[in-house]
Image 1 (cartoon, one colour):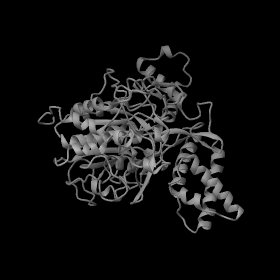
Image 2: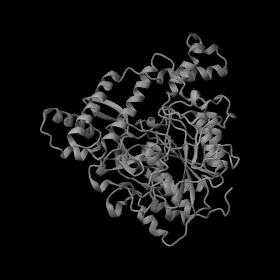
Image 3: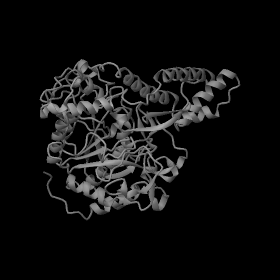
Image 4: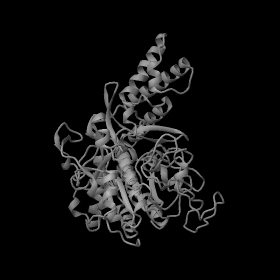
Length: 547
């Protein structure tokens, strides 16, 4: 699920809520825009030292690298993305024929595994815990002696019990959804009043701050709306983008509420119409990689490779990349089959790096995903995954997908798990929401208030999450590979992790007030650094041919 990877607590009307940070966010100081690219020694900010990295390879030729973004979709019309999108040269656009015989007709920019042949798309979906709980409720709901079950049923029973504990409504702490719906209506009403009073349909929080109404109803509307934007640190967001972000989160909470008492709607089957239980039934979906829920994937893509030095809103990290857009993550929990096939599609169509900024707490068909990860490893493809945003130690909690093969408990060699770092100018060195783990998180990267592309053709905004940290690493990996194209996935992983900047100081452990050594939060105890990575890459003896 997108927002299982990206959650943090904020204060709204005195209530502590857990909300997804897909809402565009703002930095309080202009110097923080693009902070993740800066350098500690020259800028006093713990960015990735990107300009110094480019100085190292100045004058050298690079080779184009394909990076697959498995996500919610990508705005293919965006001014900072349209020139760096992957195009399937073997496919003729719009003829509804599978010209290259890869099983997917008109896959010009990539593929949408959440689509139907009739052009409809899955946008919202249920939560995996609810799906599992209701799927096996009749089978296991009356079991009195689990020890009498067969080995196979015992595994399913254990999975069902975990789902029962994790499904919406199982927690004692329930969000007042009715209250939030009322609050949403209040915000929409305030926005309507403000648009009339200000004489415009679009305004930022900063513009609202400067607006001086004289009528009492307008004053109240301003105070309410501005207070909400302030609570979310979103003063540079447009009113419409901000409301969209809140209502997207609210829709998810309403879904959870309905799943407390009855089985969730099967959103996917009605549209996709495959036989989900048959992994060989894989030629489903459509070519609409943009759909209408592409905020997250668009933001991720801009971090990796937004067109550099074109005078538009952002500079991505890598300058010779083509983004392959693969839509497999809805507003809700992704399905294992879609993720496994998305990985295979990326590998089969030339991707060398795959960014995966999503996750969930249960994975009933993990074997399918494991086999896809093994396939990627056999084809020399690096997978980069967001560690998650629940402020949890994922050495001891469930977090999927992950690189541990269920069949033998070994670890995939072509996988990097990424936590989110921050900087003192933003309040802390580690994102307070980031998952961590001495064994399961490999490295940290900037993931707080990252400025990037958002849907709309020419729009930009801030977002926070390990979902933003993972593409920072993917961008660095693509930059390295473009100048050293014969490096293997395993060598890339070694370079990124070995060259990362070790942080000697203590930091606040996410989810607590405890100060711990930064080295306790990940395998490397370090923050990715493009400059150091490029220096190390130049010393690595690469293989002449990729296998």
